Image (tube, rainbow over all chains, first blue to last red; front, side, top):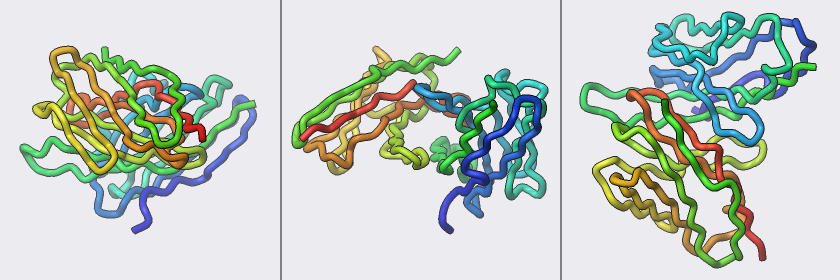
Length: 118
Length: 110
């Protein structure tokens, strides 16, 4: 396995358009995360899945954002009616969550999708 | 809320040691992490420390944790030009999400 992959790597769109990003996690990982990173800042948590269930959504994730992980494999993040403030790097990460008592949760990050909204 | 703070810039001469500092807020964090980000590349986990440890050493990297002061540091010995990057401190929150600092840009000069 070559790690977490994301597609596309770059996306330029006009304000008001919809965009969709894809993330393919490391195959045996049961958890998948989405983060957003703006210039000069660290990544900020958006949402995560355990298998196909979306278990947590940040207040940063407005109604225009939706994420899915059908069948617990790849995930998509869709942004509807994009705004200039959505311009950022969108990072996907995956991890294998162990059983009870296993708190260590190393997250492996993909290269990100850079979104520019004009 | 969670808030991780780091100094923004560090310039170091090649061969010297680098020390990057971080403060975090959530005393319940079980693990604290250091990630490295190079241009055009994803975040790479460098090392981590469990909250019941004071120190962890991994080759050129030494992590020190002061839980009382919620202070974490990363020391890179014999800093090389390939160490030039942005370094992020992160704490685990609620066993799933990571809360990152803004990152410290390390520039290694010859």
